Image (cartoon, rainbow, N blue to C red; front, side, top):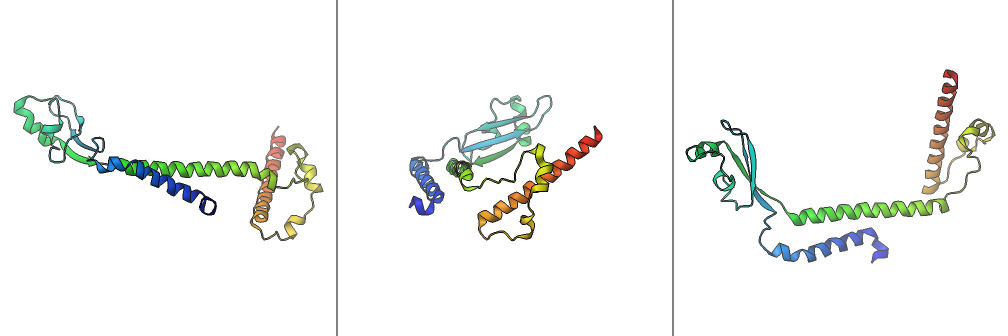
Length: 187
């Protein structure tokens, strides 16, 4: 199974494992960390504004149950609470956990793929005898055959990628030559 589908089956197995391990938490009532009541109270008279959070049920999500200690005296509580805006908020810890696991699995798979390419790339690529260091770049352009431009590249993906890479390297070498020539003129 892992040979045919690769990282996809690993990802599916990881998600199923997380759901099975977290099944006990799903069966229970909501975790206290998953629900809260958030009251935002603006400044009132000489009292600065404040944000209050508390784990209460949805029916108890009012200023009277959440704002503790009450910053105003008893006769001003009603006026103060009318200014406060309370919202009941829920989140799913399981969804967050699964999303993070999927994200980390994808990043891990990409890192493994990058390591694989770093190890295999030198074995696949051929050594280009025409590539010379930067200080001999003027000589290499004169000696390099012009077969790249007139000849059509192969049909394999690797040959097309190598062709594009060679064209890019040639452009970079031309840009470097232009920059260094200008630098010599300015010096």
